[in-house]
Image 1 (cartoon, rainbow over the protein chains, first blue to last red):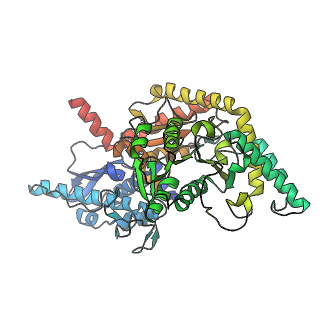
Image 2: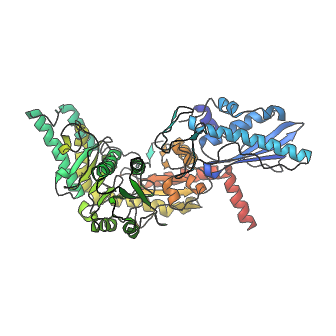
Image 3: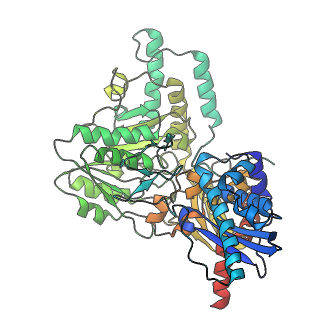
Length: 173
Length: 395
């Protein structure tokens, strides 16, 4: 299911654990959608001096967290802000299509932690971050339903195919 | 380390006797059972022998009431769609439950897009359908009730006999999806009062690719496949004879060894449940232990996610199933677990452990040892565990 790079980061996660007195914290996700990620930062001279993560989630969510911390460590804040979901997924040499949302979670958590650090530094209160992704794919009769691969709303009430990204959604999507 | 299969709900190994029967069948190059010549008649005899053994296993009065299909899903589709379209003049209302397998769930969804009205009944905290709720849901328009015998995720067995009585008292057709029960737990279509019953051979250690549908004589339904007159004109297409011969052997052994099977599997399940608290804490048993399959336990491990547990166990050569949203690829928590009232977070940490005849007590201990380490590792990594601990410390 997962490639060797992903499995390596899942089995031997780097920088896992809590951090005493972090300079910035990012908390994203929701158990509703199956994953939740906390990122803790220590910042020194505008650089990420140390970074740790805690994650509740699947193999891919854990691998994304681990790879993200490796990539961000030692980077300047400006460089770290530019780290995208795609960069993390690329560094992991690809994720299964229906797990790409896990990489979104990683970049979101990092960016939120940096934002938290900057707010504390500048003495401004951090406003509630805009949700970057759909928090749930749960839906019942009459509710809107989104493609798990590209997040486009699916119109048909019995969708098995996403026209937007040409994905076969199978029996359960 | 040797491979340890604790995922028998997904696949059972073939019994040696079943393998032998199938190898012999492959080497014999049997002809088409529909052919009139001697070679065809010889094949037909073997086909009918397997049908007879299946009828005995289910308590069917006549072997002709058994129709072989390609799997449980096809049987369920045949039962539901076949009855719906053949009886639509009488009414268009069908009753099922919230915890049915997707074969039922999606078939009914398909039928609803053809104008059928579906009532899906909730389950109680024990994961069971109340027969009184079935009775209340019946209308003049109701043509079919379909309630599963045992649930594939929780292993909980439904009060099918009581439901069957309610349904038949109201002169409505009754189907039960018994795919995960037949061959392991004793059941009898007369006692259940089922008009239709779906089963699959792999549950009883027969081959995948063979399933079947019991159709009580006189039940009106259309075939799913139109074509030749195979299977008494109820399922067209040349039969999977080699598979069916293997299934016949599996059905014969299931009937003969039912008690031994139940005893062996129940012992392993009880051992697991007894020992579990000695290895891990904070879990929920989602299986109704008073009414459940002897071989399956569904456990929610709090604060961690099921796919991670499954992958780590897999690294230790141990196979289990999980119903977490992430693992199914659906990004949705299991409808069965949510129906039981489980929170989304708890539903994510669900493992389905299912024993088979080759498992031993040592296997239970090996699994528990591995599970303990994995749960410790993942909880140390989990922000939910941290939060729960902080709350406890403060409270």
